[in-house]
Length: 112
Length: 119
Image (cartoon, rainbow over all chains, first blue to last red; front, side):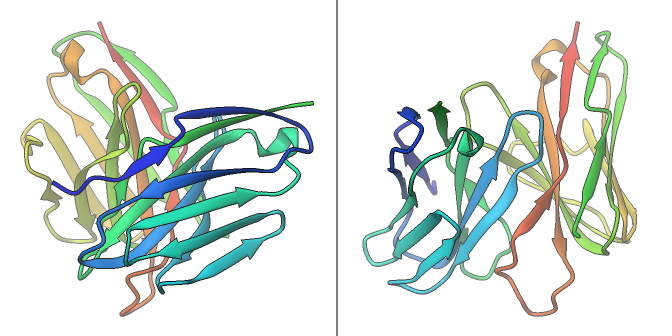
């Protein structure tokens, strides 16, 4: 059974704080790791798709790193803002398939 | 771009009735649609993958006769929950892959999801 785990489950931070959370995934048969941002009552929005070990991607104040050998990815948010409040999902994509296996997400709340 | 419209957003139905959920790609052609289900405090679980013009592929443990999937065109896929029971109450969400031949690592584009409650 392929397992994708995210930690922490939830996180409350003050506006301006930087934060990070983890996604753990199988280190074998790796093809890609996806990050999505899911705001309440909206659809999940793609943040990053990462494929190479050591990859680091950035989108504004959000960045992500990838370690495929040990099976983890970190998502960082610098200077959190209330509008960053959302659930952040990661999804593991095994080789030779377009199916994604999702973690349960990290729910971030940023207080002004 | 890459908008996926899913409706209804929520539906309440009586046990034994059927419910149809529609998922449309508005500004792109979705050759593949994925249907997920999420129970409280659990992850999105893939139910089935549908490709335009062919039969859906169901994941292990998902009853194909209960969850009917039709992908009749490149912009529309439907999920029908037949003879719904209270245990089918869940959050159902579709996602579409954009048409990038040979590219398996494109991000998915999701609908807003449908909250189904069966009484």
